[in-house]
Length: 91
Image (cartoon, rainbow, N blue to C red; front, side, top):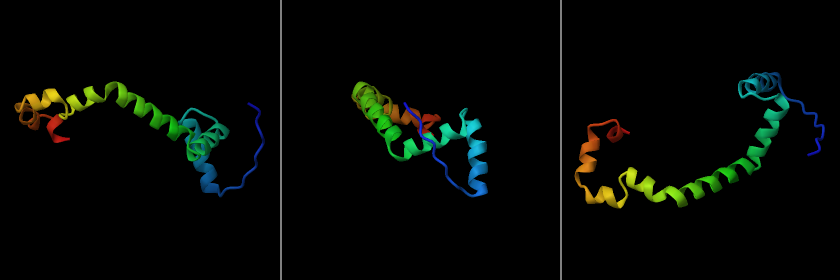
């Protein structure tokens, strides 16, 4: 993909934050800003939503069962009571 040069002016605090955050995320300042713009335009958000929808199609019944909403949890009335005394029941 061809790159285009874009010069922007930001206040010193914003520039400092970008220079600190980019390496903390393992990327250049240019890449960091590019990623922020992509996120803002929804590319990353759409990919996340599609992946979450795919996950729920594949594992929704297992997730519901494990979280107490599936058929096996309803078939065992003591499951909720057993969880109350555990860290699972305190979430």
